[in-house]
Length: 227
Image (cartoon, rainbow, N blue to C red; front, side):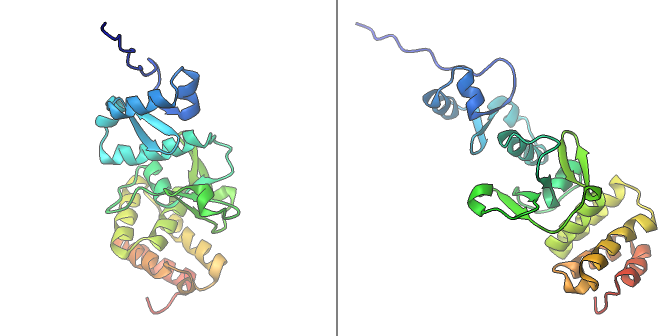
């Protein structure tokens, strides 16, 4: 007697990005999800969040990195009024800045630093002070402004990486000298001498290399010496 095989599970006809609970609501249990993963129909972007494989195959590395941010937002039920803000390289990706040799970790700004277990292995939390003036809605996600993003990235990344993102930001937004010097005021307010802040030297070097005409302005505004 021939045994009739159960039909293979099928992905929902609509949508491309789902949380585990959304797949369950559409009749796909844990076993069905595992089968879809093993047959290459579904891709796990991060814990509890999945993407249609046919869409994933068409994505470039740049789009895929941005997709991971949206997967994080989708998986954590983030809205534009969430209690954290995408920052650093994650905000840079949302702004469309070019990044060089940077990993896909998701960076967020928080008021209070939670445990690493709560954030997840692919997320890095930062607690450097920020106000709503440092935040804008990019698409449907809350991220740091372009100016704040560039400062945060340049202070975290290596000099060469910082130079790339600084140069990219100039093309994305034609900053005036006053606008570029603005972050210098932030640095001064938060630490008086920018050289006392971790990464400030890399930030200033990359700014001076990307746009030499504003280096003197920022140098004076932060009173930073021995660069």
